[in-house]
Image (cartoon, rainbow, N blue to C red):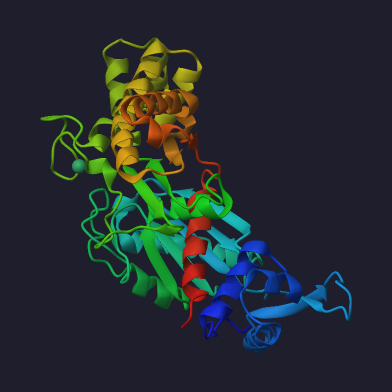
Length: 396
Ligand SMILES: [Zn+2]
């Protein structure tokens, strides 16, 4: 079939496309209520969009008096691919142009195997979604990787937990393989975009999204837009020092937040506690599985194990100290905690909240919800689809 080749010709068309993406089918009158265009100018832009094939007429709109007209919607055949590469697994999903997830696959995978092996897996998963009949092809793809990305070029730069990826032209390589436009971003930014589009941060313009997975990072949304910084490394809070002369971090420094608390650090601490005889619950799990993960700590905590609870509280305190500093600096309207460790749930959240409310000034925290993300594994892939659609629904 024909794939999306047209882009909006001007800012009005871009705005109309985004309204249709975020709100579904609209009548012309409803569109007119939301854009500052005269009726005749709106009619011209809608006709031009119909001409590109990006939007189609669909069903009769409710009458507001006078002749009934058709609703306008994005072409229901448009498809976006969302890819969220984590340190230990990858999520691949296909969405329609309204960013509804039509199919979603998750596979375990080690990002340290390098870009060639990882992309082989991603392309196989994308092909699986295609052959299952959900998509004949893709009109665009968004990709998230667990490390800093030079945003315009879509190239990872010196990612500490991704050996072999430094400088790899992810955007260009995947664009060639998939035959569609591709945008690449840090996984944390995509989680923030996902929660803003369809999750707990809907309608919040200024918020922080802290992702605690194998590492830790923070998506910064200011004025409704992701703030990436000059070189794309804004929000890289995992390498803020929390302990002078602390543990050695993957980045080569000592005492970084993520060396002391992250999925990887938590698993290591739990194994140490199990071996030292401080927790029968964790020791039993270690013996059964040969290794522990953050999920084991969550399960042990849920069973009431005091050592596991202690590890989660201690980690939450460290994250909370860093977030307290960010709150004072940025004055967000919401803090979202997400990532693989959200299984640690309310124990973690309570420690983070305690630290933030204790350390930040009342004006900054008076009305500040600190909550868990709503979308789980889907946040990254929805954010990825949102990223590429924002790009494609911009004036060419
Ligand atoms: Zn570090």
